[in-house]
Each structure stands twice: as C-alpha cells, then as structure tokens.
Image 1 (cartoon, one colour):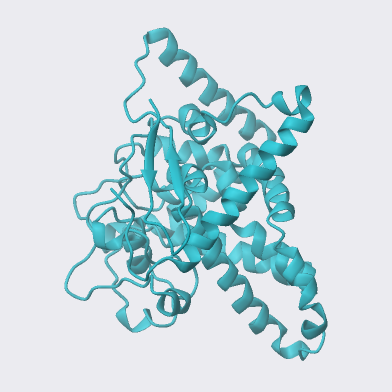
Image 2 (cartoon, helix red, strand yellow):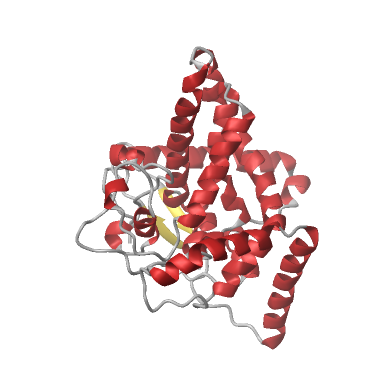
Length: 343
C-alpha cells in the first residue's frame, strides 16, 4: 500500500513526498533465507577474490580503534561482536565490488546534478587565487557542497532511501561506518565535479574526498571522548553520534563531516551539553541482510528495460523526476530553521 507523507508547503508552493517501501519484515522460508545468504556470500567471496582491499581496511580499523573502544567505551555494555556486526564487516569485505558500482553511479550523479556548471562559472575567479591559498579555498568549497549534498540525502525522500541503509545501524562503532549502499557514495560526487570544473587539481580534490571518507569511518567509533573544545572547529564522534541518533531533537542535524560551521550557519547544529546520544537507527524497517538492503532503495522504481522499450516516454519520466527533485531541493534550502520531519 502506498503511504503518502506531506511536508508543510512553502509560500505559493506545495511539495508532496511519497514513501512506498514496506515497513514489515519479509516472510521467507528456509529456501529463501538460504538464497539470501548464498548471494551475500557470493558478493563477499567475489570481492575478496578480486581484491583484499576491504579485508585490509577491516584489519587496520580493528587494530587502531577497537583497543581505544575497549579502554574508553561510550556504551560500556556494547561488545565487539554486537548485533549485526557480521553484516557491517561483510559490507567492508565486499567494498571492492560495491565501490565499483558506486563509482559508476557517482559519475552519473556528478554529471546530472550539474554541479559542474557553477564550477565552470567561477573558473576565472579560481584562476586568480594564489597557489598557496588553493588548498584552503578548495577545502571550504568541497566541505560546503558536501554539507548540502548530505542534507539533501536526508531530507529528500528518494535520496534518503539510499542513505537510510547507512543509518539503519543501531550500534555505532569501528565497523558501523562500512554499512552503506554503494549508490550512497554519490554523496561526494557533486563536490568533486564542482571543484574539478572550477579548476582545482584532480589530486587535491581526490585528497579531500579520501579525507572525508576515512574520517567518516573514525567518527562512528564507540568512544566516550567528548572533546568539547574541538566542537566549534572540527567534526568529532560526539557530533556525528548525534547525527545518527534517532532522538527527535537530533533528527536533521549535524550534516557537516569535517567542520561544523555549515551546520552553525544554516541552523542544523545540535550539540547539547547536558546529555549524550543513546538511541540510533531509523524509523522504517530495513531487512538486516545485505541483499535486501541493496534492493531496498530500488523497490518500486520499475523495470530498467523500460528505457530501452520506451525511450521517449523514459525521457519524459526522467524530466519530471528531475523537476520534482529540484523542487524538493528548493524546499530543503528554504525550509524553516529547526524544522523536523513530518509524522
């Protein structure tokens, strides 16, 4: 059954959001469960056959973070082998395959978000920047665009379907950052294409993307360091844990990955002094296995062969979809500060 969620309209405008995902567990017999497990095993096994990159990442993070989590745990009763830790590690091991699919999606999103157009427009101005200032200016632009892209992925329902996989974990620790839909990697694509079009070097822009991804893994750690003196200057586990919290006051907050200033400027900063986040996860039900999670955002999108069978109709559908996304982006940009999702 289709469930409609309506946002409050902006002046002279009404925006409707539709969520058509099932919110109940899928009932499967032992054959269905076996197929799901075999498919997951095939993805992980194939990825490991192709590359040990994911295994290396698991090993390095385990060595670096788990001892610190044990010495200074935020949630003292949380074990290394907590619920669904195997799922998160499976995502890490499968990353060579999943990242390949994500890279294709990132190129598509980078091109069709047209973030490169304003990049080309400011290219003459970028050429005037002294070389010594290029890394600083590039970093600030990359981080600001990353803030807005992250915010769109939370507040536009179509995008949220992909990002919800990452937020579905109810236990934050060294492994939880690995859980993400491969198409969720498109978060960094608009900023990357913008900077390249603006004239920043590929190496510098790629370095920013790598820093954001690696820092993101560390920000999920189950550590109790509050580091309050750093809060105004750089993202911390404290800030990111609030971002993952499902508590009402924390929803739609702390989108900044590296620095918190964009949240402060645009009204999404949330760092209470008298409490700490304890509850994580999402409201919708998401199946706790890799195959269903990879399918989750794609359910209801129709047969991909529709584009080949009806190319002209597909162009019309794509145009309307893009128009609606732009309308929703406008809604997100102009929504009142401090607003929370509708019930």
